[in-house]
Image 1 (cartoon, one colour):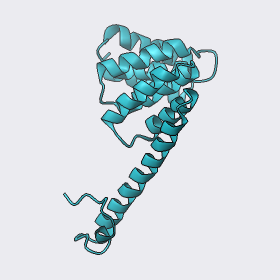
Image 2: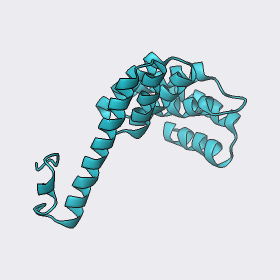
Image 3: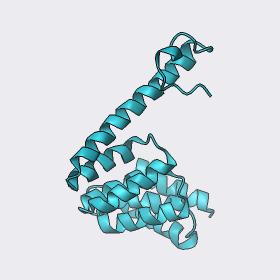
Image 4: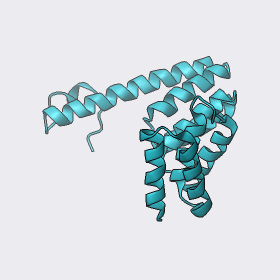
Amino acid sequence: TTLKDKLALGALLLNVKRDLTRAAATFQKCIDEHPADFRAYFNLGTILDAPGEHQDYTHAAALFHKAIACDGTVIESYGCLSGVLLKLKRASEAATVCRDGLLVKPTDSPCLYNLNVALRQLSRISEAVDLSFHALQSSYSIDLKALVNAGDTSGSNIASTSSEVDRS
C-alpha cells in the first residue's frame, strides 16, 4: 500500500468513520514508514489536539513541530502549533511560532489571532493592540485591492483614493 493510500485511509477513518483510534494508528504507521512527509504528523497532531480520550497537547505540539520541520511552507501547521502551545500555557513560544508563520503568509488569520492572544497572555497589551490595528489595516487594504481589481481593470477611480494600494 502506498503512502497516498494510507493517508486516504487515515482521512476516511478520521473524517467519515470518526474512528480516532484507528486513524491515529494509521497516521502513526505513515510516520514510521515515511518520516519525511509532513501530512501524517499534521493529521495525527490534529487528533491529539481534539477533545476526547486521545487528547495530548504535548505530543500534538511535537508532531506539529515535526510537520513544520518537514515542510515549513504549510501555514496551517503554524496555526495549529501555536494554538496547542497556548493551551499548554507556553505563550512566548506560541508568539515565536506565529511570527514564523506570518513570514510564510503575512495575512494568516489563525497566526494573527494566536499571536494576539499570546501577546496578551504575556502582558504585552500595546503590541497586541498594534497587531490588531495592523491586521485591520491590512485587511482593508486587501479588500480595496480586490474591489479595484474586480470592478475596474484600470484602477483609476478607486485606487486614486488610497495611497496604500499597490499599483505593481
